[in-house]
Length: 74
Image (cartoon, rainbow, N blue to C red; front, side):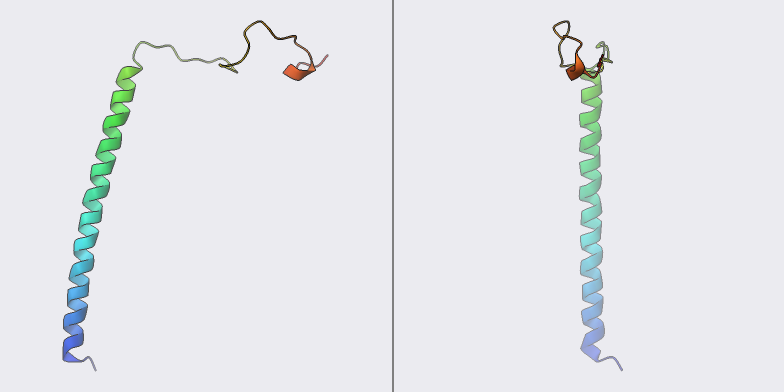
């Protein structure tokens, strides 16, 4: 048998949890909107730039020897 105060405790707990879940959902949606805005801004900044499809974009251009260290062993 449930004590009279116990049902009230459970109802109050349930209400607190529901409110916390609603606030959490609102916060996560706001974060997602912020991330989407950052992505759009980043895409706008990249307009007109060509993608770099080189295998090693930061590597040597013509200074390599072509030896075993480059993976082109001979």
